[in-house]
Image (tube, rainbow, N blue to C red):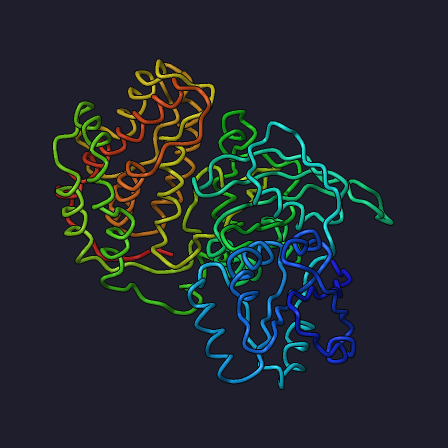
Length: 506
């Protein structure tokens, strides 16, 4: 997507700047007052403050009132001073407003450098009167500003919230109606993720590092980097949404997702899982313990007194710290294969279309044990809650979980296909059978798989519950998060009954 740059540079202050360095670079200066400047933020590309020699009141006023909002609109900022001494004073003033001022200071004798700095700034065309629908969608002023800037070339957009992500994020499927398109007004849907700027930058980096060369292009979204915009406190990640795809959980429940779990690991993530073997890596010592304890975050878990108390009421006998220490002790002598992993492979981050498993959200991509991604997905599948469920579903679900994770289990096995009484959890049985074949193929002894599953069960217990509308569904979700600790204890007890064996399988 190519677009023309804006060429207006707003100037605040009584000193009359030489226009030539700017016009030579294709930009035009436009004088404005502090009060009127915000009216032009959607038209300009930059803002320059130029006070008279020895006067800094206009700079202070801009630092306090103007710069923050100008930055939120994507403008580049510059302050012009008249000497090296004034440079130091201006720098001191801006440091006082370091949380609100991103302006760069230039001495007047280097005005050409300031003009070049502004000329190199790229900003999307002016956003128009974008209509955002439906009116009931929850957006704050910064969310709306980001969407206006990202979809500047659209008349209107319709947002569908997508759940399952981090609490700090808002994720939407975006249907857009473009204006002045030679092809037509209705492109394929986009996705828009609004989060903290550092989170968006990390995910953009991870897309380039982990996704673009290692995940097939048709099995992941693609980032529209020129639509990705940021304010000081929020940023928007925009990309193409894989149309006609449904979340993995929905596909498995309907029976249309049979084979999608195997496809996820053997096709979509195949290159991730091949890398350590292609590079000739050997099992590494110390990794498993560090990885497990880093995911559990025991101090955060123990601080959740209500979770621990409810888990104890549901059958937990050990303290979370005791479980943590036993997992660490079991992991300490084991070596494991390390490779790229998705890092947050819950069911909301896997979409299904036909027989394809499509992976989204690479914000947590990193390196870790090969068992990490399958274990994450198993916990998400088995302990997740759907919006239509109620707290009355807990008893039947617990009976199923007790069968899959029995009290005296010493190892993990794919569950039997046969069931005496088919019920609402039957789809989980089929899905888990498929997933366990992947999990247990990662590591020869099965010990690593148990450690990783216990780790992610404890992690799940400390995470906030899913975003759900009904209170009765929230109660069920809370109990399932708490019961994850009970199941973690069962697996940890099994670890002490099985001696670790050597060997790692590809």
